Image (cartoon, rainbow, N blue to C red; front, side, top):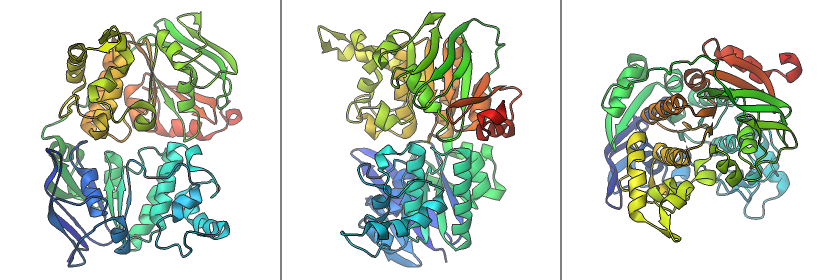
Length: 497
């Protein structure tokens, strides 16, 4: 008999069916991957199984007994926990307070002593690999650090079933390795782990079985050892996927962007050149300065020293709008906090960068928005149920495509893409990779920051490596290896020479 069974699960949001006849069965001590395209229903199924959503139909069985999960506390009492893809942390509380709030395993109540909180939290933070003080405000943490905090909180609940929804989407290679060690320990203790991910290498490394969802239905379950990448993709998308690598261009074109000894609050003497039509990858561990480089180029972080030359002209952006006027575009790492207006519609979010083209006398034209939006949606394979739907209702992959559409509408000469394929499915990733290649072929100069080395090696012409805000390596992508990039990412400036 299995440890856990959810069958015939159905869930509707308005008139849209997120799940219909979904099924998931778990055994104790297994890592069970849950895969599917964005919008297939993976996160919805995980939330139902963890008590944060009520299903419209279906049943859940735990250790042979039917159970009703009215809320997450019900699930926690039964030993079911979840790490959400969209982190549910309290930014205006401390790290320690986030770990103990609503935690049935923390003995003290509302008037908990700081010392008791610290004693409870320290071993959990160490196990998750998060090296911050318990009194640190969560709002000051990076996305990757918040992800580690969410992992620590899940560990604190002593679950026998743990759902992990894209747990490595914001983690560097070293932090992900720490998580994999934690997963191995939990598995050895008999914990069943549901691992929701789009990363095939992780799926084949970690999981014992894989269940695939498509359009809200369970397509099938396979033993990981008896399947392969091609079969899983066919199950997910219903077709074979074209994943041809980008052809590498010779690096003999004109320099379009030159950065000389750039220094900000995070960056130290960063220098590089970017050619017209080139994709320059930016690699580095968490905190290396990848996102901060984009913030400096886009006028978000002030430049303390050094020079930026755009097409040979001095460039010192005073603000993001100034950078945009000079031909710079940015797709930020955190699409929800930094990029999208979640209550506004899909087409409104996409056309924010070009309001002058879709309005007259200060009034928006719905017809002009539609005329501009529809071809871009087709080009990006953006598939909202309606362009008037709030963008917060879309899957992660479609939300990312809305941000890319906004950047394309602004028609920048230089585009900084900060982890553009983070947390999205394989088909949506291929669409974004194809778009990057098309933009470079049209003469755009692209800086691609990514936490995934295979992504950089596939999409980039050259790869720049940062560590602690300094450049520690530059590699032609055709000659680069993951080992060489990681060596540069972990060596100091002096060691790298």
